[in-house]
Image (tube, rainbow, N blue to C red; front, side):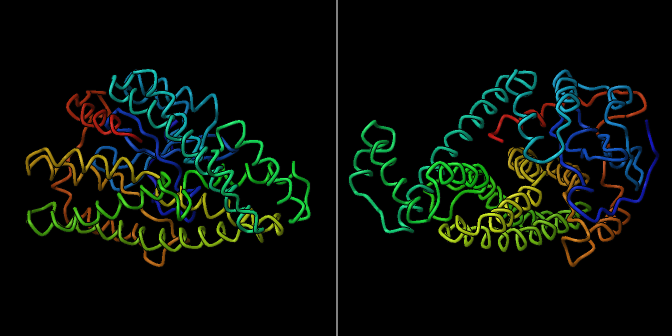
Length: 368
């Protein structure tokens, strides 16, 4: 069940695990990964104010911690699906929230997020069709005027895509299949010139706002939590720097859609890898940026508590993804400012912090 506290310095994103949006405060944003024999396990930080990470068999978590109804459902859902990537965990989280177990506002936000995912997928697919036609010199004002959602527009699209496939020397069915694969990978990130940025691109922009907010707060509110806020801003900035490079490379590869279609086996793997890396880079940050936005309506004391709560779940980059050892730096910050850190739940008695649960549910009420 409980493997005991270990030194936590993951080398890869997979070893770091994917963040799970539990509403039980102690479990909020704990990470799930595949451990020995590919069994799921959860990493729980700072139990009883300790410095280590506790590794718990996933199926044993309900026996250790008093969980909300939402969390028990989400836990069971992840067990059944054996989900482990950021994409899979997010879909499971939205399914759980959609049932209303984290409150009606969270349910509405989950339904809205799922609808937006579908809309983004449709938009991305349409824009990629236009990119392919442009790449082979088959732009059609008539198709644009008719609209792809009309019978006439679809007829013109099929004609043009058949000609595009001939130009690319491939079967039209294969072209459509590859286009669908690219759209599925691209939609969460978004195209460079899309009228609506993808979810991960918006997440990167939110992270920039969070960095600026932490920097300003640390300057304006001196105290024990100020150095913690500065560290949070440093981690955010480092993540942003890597994310911008990954995003730029991803967009360049997608924009070269002709070569991507022709050199499919190698090129698509690279595109898919970059999209997955963006998801791993930003995994866990949406809760943090949302929690800080919610905290803007609180007083300074509660904001300081929020800063320390966020420090506990900060998505530190794995060793192989960063030139800086943020894990070691975080230990130094924690040792210097441990007195400002508060626990949200006594894990030995299972006593809940209801106010903390409400704040977490308020974050979930924002569109994930």
